[in-house]
Length: 276
Image 1 (cartoon, rainbow, N blue to C red):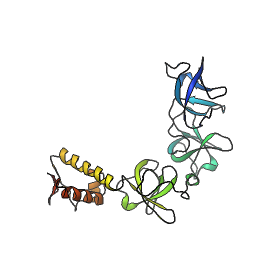
Image 2: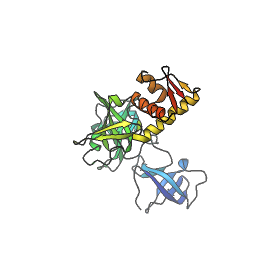
Image 3: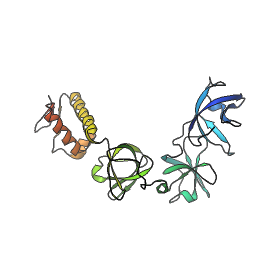
């Protein structure tokens, strides 16, 4: 039986002991401590658990949910430091270790840091690294133009935001595509705008093409209904005002109201848009 370290596993309860339950791993079993076991758990049941190492380097199971699993890039808070490295709170009893060699500028207690959770090859233990770039590559691109993806805000650049695509690739979200403050470490829905010949990737927030327009059109219709059939917005409205109200760029707003006007669903006036 193969156990996925640093991941969720569904395992069968083998036996009960005073301090918990042993789960079947094909060998001696993995302990699920009593305090993490559901009250009605019994032998023969299957249970979904997260597997990691305890402080004695033994595999242990928990029903606690970590803030990230192996392979994830997440923002975590530093809870303590030592000469060897730092410890981050990832939602489990045992904190996540970041070696000094895997830090960029040195972590401080109380700080939040964007890290990649991985399995250290030498120790075979779950660890974290602030040096995320080495885990990302655009050499073999696994996404296509117009494909919907998950975008993680990685860092601010002079021309926009560097975004992690599906935890695998790096892409650029240009400043003219950003209409709200992005939080570093937070994941946003987006899509692949274009893949350039040099394998650089441009991305955008939201949904691509007609699906995006259809969704935004429904948003405007519902807002019109909510506000008595009239909204004081037009093609001269400020982009930030449009985004604050509709959650879309001015370019998208103009395209959507143009389509709604053609479909005779709205009327355009000097004061704003009216629902027909």
